[in-house]
Each structure stands twice: as C-alpha cells, then as structure tokens.
Image (tube, rainbow, N blue to C red):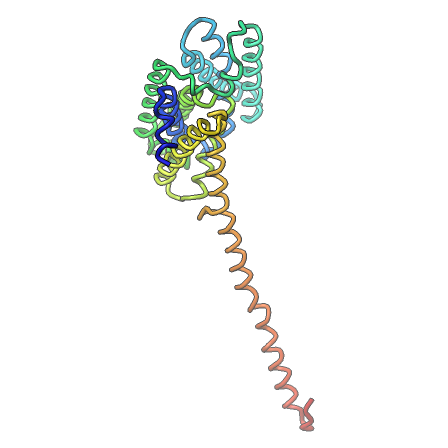
Length: 313
C-alpha cells in the first residue's frame, strides 16, 4: 500500500498534477456550494464553455491561456446580462444562446489553427503536462479566488439565501453578483488545466449538490465540499496513474461516486432516510385504520344486550 502511494510521487509531473488537481478541486468546491444554493449551475456551464475561443486566441497570440479564458469568461457573463436587461428573453435562454455560440466559435477557431493545437487537451485537460510556470499560475489564481470567497463569505451567503435582506442591510446586490461571476471565471481558469473545459462543469456542480444531502449548516457544507472534492481529486490522480486512464475523467468519476454515496446514505434526503421515513409513516398509520372498528363492535354488542326481549344475537 505504501508503494502504491509513494511510487507516483517519484515523478515531478505527477507531483505537479496532484498539486494542480487539489488547487482546482478546493477552488471549485467552495464556489460550487454558492452556485448550487443560488441556482446558477447553468451559469457555471455557460462560462466554462464560453472560454474556449479565448483559450485558442491566447494560444495564437502566444499569451497564457488564463488571460484569454478570463477575458472571454467575463465577456460571456456581461453579454448574458446585457441580453437579459435589454430584451424579454429569460435567463436560461440567454445563457444557452451565448455559451453555445461562443463554444462553436472556439471549435471553428481550432479547426483553422495549426495542427499542433490538440483539441482533446483543451477540452479534457492535460494535467500531466503541467509545467512549473503553469503550476505557479494555478496556485496564484486559486489563492486569490479562495481568499476572496472566504473574506466575503458572509455577504455572499446572505446574497445566496435572501438578496432582499442583503439589500436592506445596505449591501450592494449588484456588486456581490458581479464578484461571484468574476470569481466563477477565475475558477474556470484554475480548473481548466486540470480537467479541461467540458469537465469543469462537473467540478462546479457535483460538490455543491453532494453536500446538500449531507448537512444543513452552510459553514459545514463548505468544509465537507472541500474535504470530499480534495479526496476525489487525490483518488482520481492516483487511479489515472495506476490504471493508465484520463486524469480529468478519473477525478470527475470519483466525485460522482461521492455523490452516489451521499444520494444513498446521506442524512438529508438520502435514499435510505426516505425509505425509513416511509416505513415509519406506514407503521404510524396502520393502527389508526384498525382502531375505529373496536368502538363499532362495542356499540353493536351494547345495543344487542339492551334489547327488551333479552334475546341475544
């Protein structure tokens, strides 16, 4: 067992892959809890897909992928907000139009770039090919995102559960919304290197959906999300090494396994809890269905014994 744990760490690329995966997992886990509570899961899907043309353009110019991804992520959010503000189109339709259009633009740009651009690495990540410069970039972006989330966690939590109350207390709901969307773009950039554009969606949704089945307290949900996602990232990286499979897919499957366990055994709405509740409800209602028959029988006996001729039935 010790050899299985220590063997991958002998290689520098595996150490960098593990660090990048852990940073991406922690960042996505924290933000995921807010996204799920607010109902912005589709927004996370939109931003993660909309950054594709930014990544391709950054490659063509020779800039870091993070710059192009962040610019297009923020631009997608602004474009969605502009469509909602100036038209009668609802939020889900605006999100669908923007992210599919930008994603298609990215695919077209990839088809026109030199063959050295690997589409699979952009879409599904290339964490095993992380360089030292990429590691520093991910660490810096991840640290900034996590620090901002923790510093503003009370305001963001109030915004998530009761925006009207947050506004009444003097908080700027518009600024909190903009902050959260900006951090979403940064988080996508952080996770892009680890799992790619498509699988980022799972890392932004699955942790938040998992902890909803485990706890009611928001602080505990944040802690559980970090622990579960960090464990899933570690398991996924080791599984990819020993089984020779895709690292990003392994991480996401580990998170899906954690969600499945919470879905079955979770204390808040888990399958077993619901089955126990139904059994108790049936057991509680079963005696009440038999109870009314006893008074009726007693009344019948009483009426029979009270007959004037003394004849008993």
